[in-house]
Amino acid sequence: MSHRNQRPPPDAKRRAVVAVQVAVMGTALIGFAALAIDVGAMYDAKGELQRTADAAAMAAAAMLGDYDETTARDTAEEYVLCNPVLGQAVAFAKANDVTFYRAVLNDQGQYDLHTDGNANSVGVILNHNLPLYFAGIFGRTSANVSTTAVAMLIPRDIAVVADLSGSHNDDSELRHYKTTTINLHEAWGGFLGGIDDGDDSVWVGDEFADEEQMAGPAWGFFKELGYGTVGIDASYDPTADAGLIHLPKYSDWNHAPLEACLAAQGYIPEEVDAIMADAHDSDGAWDERVAAALGLARWYSGMPGGLWEQMGIDPADAGNGNDWVGSGELSWHETFGERSISDSKTVWRDYINSYMSATWTQMYHANNDFRYRFGVKTFTNYLTERRPSNSQTPEFANTRQQPMQSVKEATDQLVATIDALESQDQLSLEIYGTRGRHEIDLTENYSAVSTRLNAMQAGYYDAWTNMGAGILRAREELASDRARGSARKVIFLLTDGYANVPSEYGDGGDYTGGPIYAKDEAELAAAEGIQVFCVSVGSYCDTSLMDYIADVGGGQHLAASGATSAEMSAQLNEIFRHLGGSRPVELIR
Image (cartoon, rainbow, N blue to C red; front, side):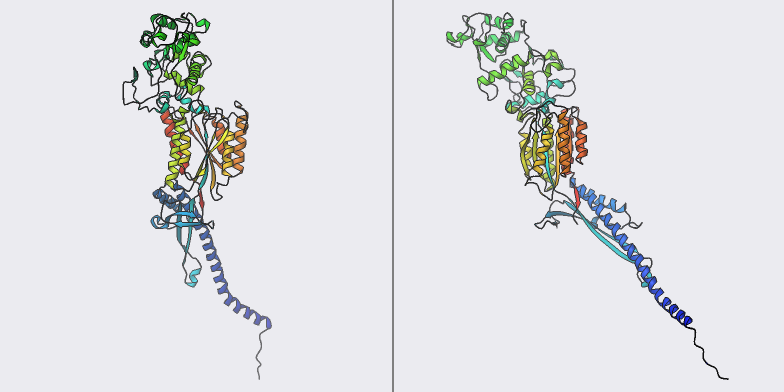
């Protein structure tokens, strides 16, 4: 019997072919799947590792605000250890994996990295050995993933906006003696170039008992009185202050040292009696006899044998010989600063008649016993309260008025901090009183800002508080050709009071419109990408407005409210040191 081979059915043949193909392709598919999973893990690890490097570099760079490389390395390590990659800790050697650079912008708009000079940027290198789960079939059990990041303290264009309204000498005024330790004695000590070394010596005759002490000026009988009580606190009693003499209107005066001083000048007894008596106060003679008593003017009475004869005055230029101290019989001779006799006379008359006899002054409201009490203390206070501007009393530019002096010292601290960091920042100076004024262009000559501010004073130009115009001047400077496109735009806004001018050229005293205008300008600054930091000084500041402006401007409100001048100065110095070092950080690689 013959047999024939049977061919397999077509379907069976196809199944066999497919089975072979599946067997062959299965291995490849498994390989591709393994590759896809491991490659995906590598991409995920790369992304997480980059984010960790970025965060570590930025956090470390922020520490360079104080130029602290040790803290920067520790901070980078902390961020790396707190950010595992795919659940696994990243190996990190902070001594080798952190590099400090000085980044310098080149002509192409890119940053070149240098390892010499003060560092302003931090580079972080991360390497991570990632386990591979399926690639082992190809002999690969792990893969090295690496990344780098460089973060830099970005240069800033900073507009320092300083409040130079009249209130920036308030902590030197007698009106605040019950609430703070005023430094009127210091302000007087530096007046006309004097230097107060803290000694409590007083005038004896025409000079201080301590010859090493230079202090503020004195005139006429003020030299005999001396400054008087130096340390003034809430227990201070003007009636017990030996540096003040009480010369009230409509009263006879009984003051033996004053009478002796008048006699020593050459007044005869009849003239001394006339000066000390109130016989003609109702006729308007009080301010004239005060001027004569204090030795600011000489009285040429015309009485036989009087001072006028001893000084050789022509009888035609002397008085009518009665006991009325008349204004036409006075010869003013004590000059005030560099002023002429005529200008000095205007100041003395205003002090005597308009200020010391008034009941509307801040000094009087603090304690009505200050009224009619004359001396260098109340005269200095008069100038501080009523004549603070540079055009009126330029001598105040170099005195330690508070809180103005604390602001000056804090600005010096800001300049020193930025200068030491070699930060490539620029500073400008804008000031505001009743008007906003641009003082110093954006510059890397930081001392120009502090030098100019140190030469200024509270109420330098005018007295009101136009905060909005100060912000406007800053906006204009930060948008000028001097501003750099690569720099972060920042405003440091300072005030000790309440905004009270409602527009750029508005009138002062508007405590409703003033804050609205300041808010409007702050919102415009924020819209222009300007970051605003606010610094408030003292306990009389509108802190709610400063909070609002700082919040709108994406910055921070920092307050100095020390109970004493020393405390406030220390707080302000720390605030400005912090602001100088708190620079924005950006990734540059």
